Image (cartoon, rainbow over all chains, first blue to last red; front, side, top):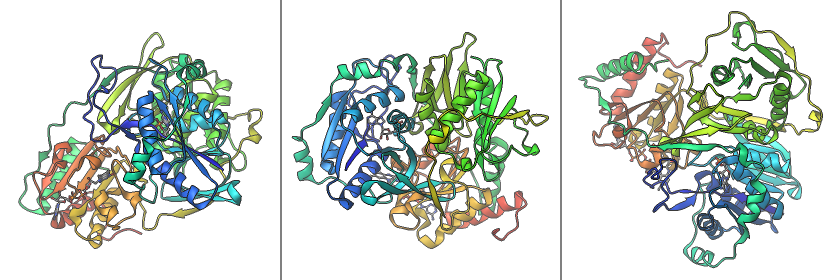
Length: 265
Length: 330
Ligand SMILES: Cc1cc2nc3c(=O)[nH]c(=O)nc-3n(C[C@H](O)[C@H](O)[C@H](O)COP(=O)(O)OP(=O)(O)OC[C@H]3O[C@@H](n4cnc5c(N)ncnc54)[C@H](O)[C@@H]3O)c2cc1C
Ligand SMILES: Nc1ncnc2c1ncn2[C@@H]1O[C@H](COP(=O)(O)O)[C@@H](O)[C@H]1O
């Protein structure tokens, strides 16, 4: 069976964020692009499924400027994905989750999969919209905040667990479907050096920018437009509570929470 | 902009607080038009709930208490058609956001989640602000009309006061083709062992513990403090990696991102990977014996000292102030 994993290039967590000169987006200068955190869980889940069901092929798909997309696709291959599709963003196209979903949908129509895995949300824009929108475009059900997926009935069905308030829901569902992963139970694996080196030469299938432009055209009038990108004023550092006994510290903190911060329940 | 539909998400205790906040947001973007609440599942809200909407649309069919997001998206589109609304607001819970993604496609609307602020201009323009990069930056977006969907971040907007009387309600006619949509397929529920508090991602107060607790046995000091506040319990990766608590407790880059009203970090140094998961909390308190710990750079209030005497004193003081008895309930 075919499994697709949607992976987004996001800036490495150590990146020092800076607005671009127009103040409308992140300055991409010097940014290292890596797999979004939950996407690592999605890749890990795909690879676990592949290991449990021989004959399964995992394809990583990424949409964005080709250099960035290729970077994370090679990382996905180094981890164990079999194939990769780079969906090339047309120059100047709106950076909107619904536009992204339309582009990924085009890729999935060329490289179909019976199970699509993605992350719950990305660490940069944190919209959480791309997965469910792709599912709607594919007309398949989506299952969010999943932590564990198991295939049954030779890949026709799956059992999955969703992390919800107070516990885990166990669901049974038919394929085709899309599952958005939250943090996996297993720590995502790390790539071995020989595989990283090999991934540098791995072939990448491409969905050209011109085809993407045509596929997203209908969505563009509804795309959000970014007017500003800002950094918050730097935190000035904590106000330290002076005290002589633990009880005094406790009383002072509770008073501050109640009267100044107004967060006491 | 005229009129808005709000999905009133249910919890075991009634309409979710985040959905009540969504009603306030709907009012501010409805342009003077009606605000219509959609309630899916058995029965209307009890009289005590007095949700401040102008009208309630009810859908009560077998199995719909636990509707799938495809079903909810179809019902919301039908509610908008029935009321003529051109905006929708859904609480930014995990389920709410799943519905927004589908609905934006199905209903042909611009959409933004995780919204913490908005400006609805007189000539119909709508600008929203949302934190990005785990609260390390923010962006302002313009949402083109005519149709728009917003998911406000829980706790970002105030709950509007309740209405003086229950709103008028009527049944929503199920849209064509509805019965063909797949349900959620729920099979069973396994409560998290030992978890009594609210869900980490949606709690208004989170108390997290780190390696400073020293042993898994002393982690209960954090849990007792959380319980006294009705808070969710979180942990640093040092704690989850060591297996003191399951990885579902982990806050940070590779764990959960949280943004409660109050975040209390106990014995946590404040590594960047932890900070990105909690820095957008409204008020941050840190308790740490090392005055130089980086957590104090992002905290609003700090207590420098040994957590072992401080935590029990704090828990006792909170219990006293809240009129709770000394022994842990239930
Ligand atoms: C790729 C990657 C991803 C990561 N993701 C995450 C993540 O998602 N979440 C996360 O939390 N970490 C993450 N980490 C780990 C992170 O870098 C830190 O190692 C971790 O957060 C440290 O946990 P800690 O603060 O509990 O422990 P420590 O750094 O050991 O800090 C313990 C603190 O307790 C204080 N202390 C000790 N005794 C007492 C006492 N008696 N009273 C009061 N205070 C005391 C100390 O002063 C110290 O500041 C990640 C790391 C990497 C490399
Ligand atoms: N540009 C992209 N390319 C591939 N997958 C993406 C892209 N953007 C988002 N996704 C997928 O959709 C998930 C949710 O992203 P978001 O809606 O941006 O929070 C991510 O975790 C990815 O799995």
